Length: 258
Ligand code: BTN
Image (cartoon, rainbow, N blue to C red; front, side, top):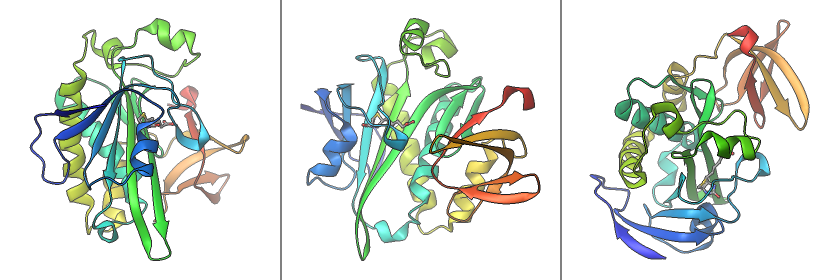
């Protein structure tokens, strides 16, 4: 591991990042070690990258921007559900500012989608005591320089990369700087803010509301109209007039309904 200083204009997030050539998981590293608030860990390769719903997160060496941010101060100023949504907002806004022509969207709860395919996955993990959250780690995997061959080989038919979407190679450090600045802005926006304000912003970037979607929860499929989010960020599905809320599921957008 080496410490590398990056060029960011932030107060909370530290510009001295921890850069690993290879690590099991940057989320795991920040959760298990005693490090300062605002520490960022970046990896060229993860041997045990973690995804949502206990899945693995695969990325070939150097083609993905893989990093995590540790927050362990002033956590009582945030609604616990806000981290997942504010992180997706941050990536969406950073990518929109860098590549204004990209057809970006957010998919519940925190996937960033480009032209219908996943370009970034986010895993928020936390530690808490009875008194509340003590540590939050926001981990992001942004697909940057993968070619189509990678997605075909890994069976990731719903994945894409910035290189595929823009036709250009992406400099990971430049992108990291932009995303971290955007993340700090989103954290400052969400601090002391009602969760409804954060969810409203998230919803403004989600084109699937009011559309017919499919949800998979514990291998069970539910379909219906994506009606709204509840105040904890759960997804409210209108299933033949009955409103049901889901918290741990995967959404797939039925292209026939778009
Ligand atoms: C998802 O399932 O969509 C979330 C994927 C999150 C992957 C990132 S890569 C950096 C960080 N470290 C991990 O082990 N996971 C997250």
